Image (cartoon, rainbow, N blue to C red):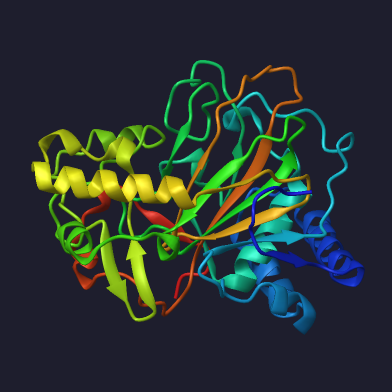
Length: 330
């Protein structure tokens, strides 16, 4: 059972069978979960035909928690095979679950991929990798993965982040904290609403880190139509160059996010859906064994067409030369 106080949406047996059957048919027709125009076309058709019951469970995040756990899907620990040694060697491991994730993502919006990450796949494998234990990326293990907005450096980042659990024998928790739960005074909100510092590309984007354009300063907080929203990644924000007042306000925000953080330990088959404009997420440290039994997640990123939750100034950002690929470009 998941820990923490995340809202849960429980799929019934018929809905689970519907999703698994659709994914199985797509995999049988495509022979792989590596995305192609043909596979994406089949996913789009199947997602459009999902029942109203399934669609109800995939409705937008509707509480200030900014997240929910979708429960009911299953993973056969033996049939799925060992945890890959890295994303680069994962290939089609757990392929049917890749397609389930694509179906869920397509029902919620438009899945995106990145040219510079995991070979442009729309579903990523998140596993610990030797040599990356200390990094602030999903391949790390020994360190606390600091709470952050997914792909915070980029104006085309996802609106929704999906983390599907394949294996978690050690009950390793994902941490999550909603900006709608914090208590900040108006002065701090005003300070952090100014575009004073950039957010730099993380270590998963080596090519972006070599981009020679000037990093744009961006606000951490802003008010959208339905409340306070954030863009936050302290591990890749050069706070050392901030003014003392800005740094103090930022530290108070960090402390508040830590205060309201919940820990969600996913079981196989469960999918954590996070609103990337409301919630920062991270992960507790753990000791990787690299023996095929380590924690293994599937990750999908989703844009929601027509969603207006971000400052208009973001449209002018260069994104450090990184291009987001939409599964279903308009």
